[in-house]
Amino acid sequence: MYRGETFTLKRDAQAWAQRIEVQAEHITASGYQPVPEGYSVGDLIDGYGQECNMGGKTKQATHAMLKRELGGIPLKRLNSIHLRDFIDKRLEAGAGGVTIAADLSFFGAILKWGKHSRRIDLPTDLARDARRDLTARNVNTRSNEREREPTPVEIEKLFAYWRDNKRQKIPMATLCTFALATAMRQDEICSILVEDVDRDKRTVIIRDRKDPRKKDGNNQKVPLLPDAWKLVEAALSTRQTGRVFPYQAASVSTAFTRACAKLGIVDLHFHDLRHKATSDLFRMGLTIPQTAVLTGHKTWTQLKRYTHTNAQDVHDAVQALADKMQEAA
Image (cartoon, rainbow, N blue to C red):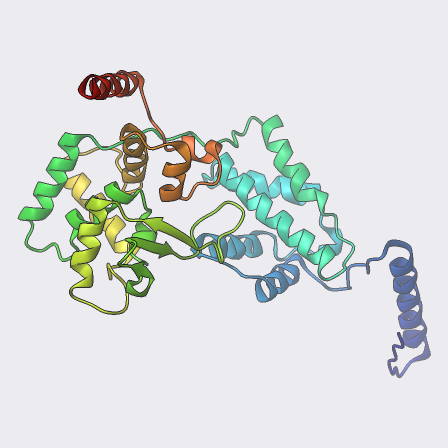
């Protein structure tokens, strides 16, 4: 490949030619170009953001934070000390180990993009090694599995509160009932389209469903069980297009949290309805594959985090089976 440049001074031309020659030798030897002069970590992060899908709000916020914290570092000088200081600062700001590990994983993806997409000779192992070092620093990178489920009394209190609250515009009882009947996340519930509902088969397509490895294009067809279908059928009678439940997920979350605070219900989130719904599906007698069709989980490891089957549930299941056998006899 021919490259040319014009200079006023001979020494500038000689320095440029020498630099280009070094770059050419580097590319020949390694297959990658050296980091360009004046190129910063922020430039690399910007390039990644322009070429790659930035996904949802979490990914965008992490992208902005990485640029803010690391963007000013010359990319050629990036080393493990910079990431050590980054971790220190994140810990001082109150970030947990799981969050920091996710930050480093995202930064590692940016470095890999720079190396394999832009063909820049980058130390892609830096972020991976920094993430591994978290354990040596006694930083817990494993999330605590949440086992909180709403009790029947708590659900009754919430529904009564919304029923008596004339200022409540979002039909929270309806949305919570739907969540308990489907095990869907709040953003999934609020994004269901009328056009994606199959009235004959009583199914709905959840588009871009959350997945650790793939979100974009992860569309899943989900059956709507009787309790859920009643609510969807009622909504379909009032609209032909658009969202079945036309409410903002953030507003739903806020309304749920506000109601819990008013009623003195401690440590309960809308997402905990998904935990209860998943456990209830197993209590109904559904198998792991059948439950996974509803929840969207790809593996048992993912699914079991939402499954809180206890000893009493096992006793109840055995008793129900015995009752069926007795009736059949």
